[in-house]
Length: 331
Picture 1 (cartoon, rainbow, N blue to C red):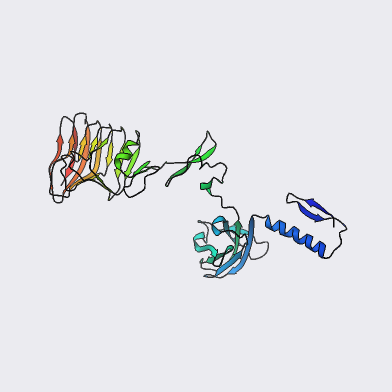
Picture 2 (cartoon, rainbow, N blue to C red):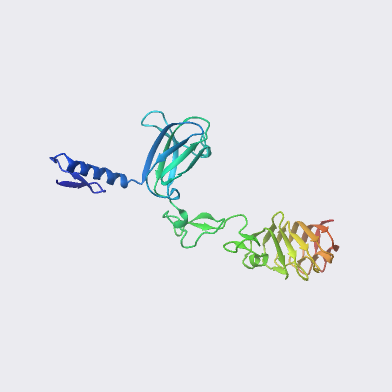
């Protein structure tokens, strides 16, 4: 039998005049098999799927479910089945269907549970192409030069013509004592400040115990304490936070004194600093001289602090030591 190779799949097509029989049958079978094996997508139809029923679609890619992409469509009732893609905003929404690998046939079949409230004609389009951004599968996405970290987003870089992971959240540094340090996450406030630049925003999460005073010497830095977050003095230190960076903003700071002697939980020696919605708490039988001390250089400072004497005492709301303080204090 003579054949001619055709198409980019190099299909061995029997030449004109080829006799029938087993030889021709085998050749046609080989053509169909090669076409089928070289298709990276499947269009699978399952009509009249009842509400609360599961339709099984056989793709036979023999690949794990996680390595496949799929799209689900509503189909018209007659062939050629005009399709309407089901999405998060369609009616019914994609959330009304559960798509998963078929138990016992995880590499060859996919189940779709219809919870949409009505009988549906379903078409599942399956692609053997997971397109994983984390592995650099998309050509104009670069996640290999600098590996992405948790919480980052993709931003377009004109110079390279690629999308790259960057930290563009409102807070570009997170202090979380219970987390693993890496990327924009720090386990201590001191470490986050050391890595900060002017204009950065730091979010404090959780409770951190400090045994040495923290110095904030970065201008135009904003630090915000998430609700429930606290910075706790765990040793005999003069202050918990010493601010020397101008125009610093402390939002909802919570300083707590535990079983130690702290003269001033907060010291400010920089111009135009603001402290809003703060709390100073004594959680031990100790005496704190003042909740905040303003030193030379601390001009035009403003503080809004609440003082909570749980078991100890804060003698003065503030101590103005050659600075300028305006504010309100509540006990």
